[in-house]
Amino acid sequence: MSGHGTPIPMISRKSGPLSGTADVPGDKSISHRSLILGAMAVGETRITGLLEGQDVLDTAKAMRAFGATVTDHGGGEWSVQGVGVGGFSEPDHVIDCGNSGTGVRLIMGAMATTPIAATFTGDASLNGRPMGRVTDPLALFGTQSFGREGGRLPMTIMGAADPVAVEYTLPVPSAQVKSAVLLAALNAPGQSVVIEKEATRDHTERMLQGFGAELSVEETPEGRRITLTGQPELKPQDIVVPRDPSSAAFPVCAALIVPGSDVLVPNIGLNPTRAGLFTTLQEMGADLTYENMREEGGEPVADLRAKFSPNMQGIAVPPERAASMIDEYPVLSVVASFAHGVTDMQGVKELRVKESDRIDAMAKGLRAAGVTVDEGPDWWKVTGLGADGVPGGATVASQLDHRIAMSFMVMGMASQKPMSVDDGSPIATSFPIFEPLMADLGAQIVRANG
Ligand code: S3P
Image 1 (cartoon, helix red, strand yellow):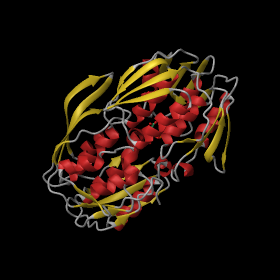
Image 2: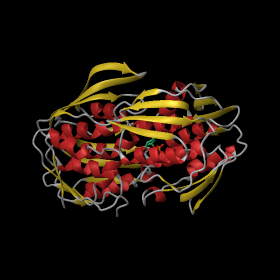
Image 3: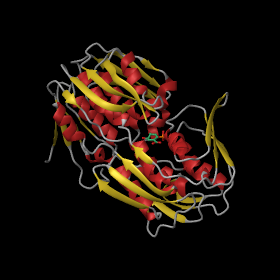
Image 4: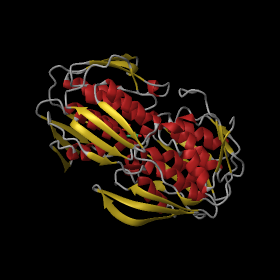
């Protein structure tokens, strides 16, 4: 199955020690938001270090379709000439968000309170994902949506002509839903409120404040209560996109399981709403340290150093940490396979509605590689086989999911026999330089047909 052109089968073989520096690309979440908020500001936003992965490029194209001028100046430097809150024009073609749930859900929110219509679609993965979680709260503003059965794409959104402010409690811990509601609230008069019981990544809140919106956050007994005053004039910003902790996870985890490795991954944002994986790895006994801790652009940043860690122990990952590492469970399950004992991951129902059902996709591949996995609707457990105990030797379906493909490429670097994926092409959605970056560290990943 491929929605990205010709499938690219890949093989990863046992690698010598990984060493050197891994300069991972810009943060995907912040890159999407920079383009969208830039398009909703009045004037020119400049962005340095934008992730030029396919997901973000699709968002850039969408912002052009809504009337913003988005320019690629080369080398990760971009600018966006915004049209202001409520200034989007009606696109004259279907908006294709490719593989990106973040792209489509945030853009739906951003156009939902402007009286225009837009039709959204995506690849086979995105068109299978639930959109009702976004269109339900958008309906409270007066927005209409017409999609396929089960609230799936393709879907047409009719923006509200007279939007009203809303108060909404998130039924699922999702930064995408929270952000869609906040972006819609930008063009609703008065104060809108979003309440989240569990804290999810807070980039939208931080960036809205940076763009000059009146936004406050209170910790209350019912959860984080975010209040946004509608119809501000957003002021363009100069944004330096930090590097992506979710991409850093791959070279870090690879170094922990490949004997003799010592890898530096510099300039990684350690926003507490994103850094749960690194805490978990440290609790498992990983030799993972933070060097040069500092603050940049209001966010904690450090250089991560990861070394081969043959004595990691499985742990019970606290469910309340799930939101802060939701994209990292696939690669954590690979590390867990090389640890001793059981790694127990509870409270992770959201993994079932990502680019793939990530519990199912990983469990199938891990079992084929000789690892025992138990699973339930919102939990899974991986029984580790120790540093040199994972048989490997399987080919896994990546199911149009970049993180499934990269996780099994990491596994193949340390398993006894190589690991293959049927299609590594989705890696380009979030980490287009994954193959050369890993090769520079000493990994042996090859394209099976190349
Ligand atoms: C993201 C939020 C998360 C995450 C995704 C990026 C974001 O999704 O899985 O990769 O940028 O807001 P959910 O909001 O569905 O949890």
